[in-house]
Image 1 (cartoon, rainbow, N blue to C red):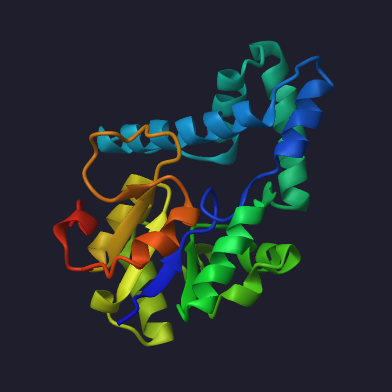
Image 2 (cartoon, helix red, strand yellow):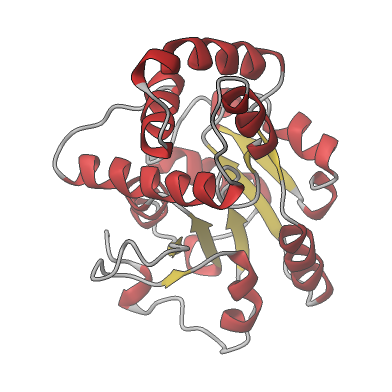
Length: 236
């Protein structure tokens, strides 16, 4: 039986606007390639997870932008005005507004193979609008936005709400996301198997099932997975 697949949004299917990041930093004399931004974003997820692992939890847009700008090589004197500019841009339109071609290709493959898909995302109420603008919404039965539902990952109630709404049981589901102590923890807490995304192998040695990005998902699913396998529940 095919599992019902829930996917995260940010850093799973949609990514920060690298073009905007390059433009606002280039205006101050920086030439930071997209590949560098991609690496820094992945490093931030590991940094955030490592902080949560050790009992610290701090995440807001200013903290995130400040951290990635510094890691990308922007001098401290330039960081506050760039953060202000990016905050303003995010207020007008979410910074998470870029989707790689491989995201569409993977969703097409999964849809063609008959998988039912929904999104569970920690967000600010704009996920559906963003997915509609990118042409991604058509692949999903439902889009569960934490701001609208009222619970945020890793609170298992967000996952439980999503399962209730689409009419599935935890044993029938698989969740895919990029933050270990948000996505895997929350899914496992709701009794749901989880796969973690780790594009650069930064989580080497962390238990669980890790894949580089969603392009690896169809081939993994073709292996007729046992979703009761303990590997899918490293944080249960």
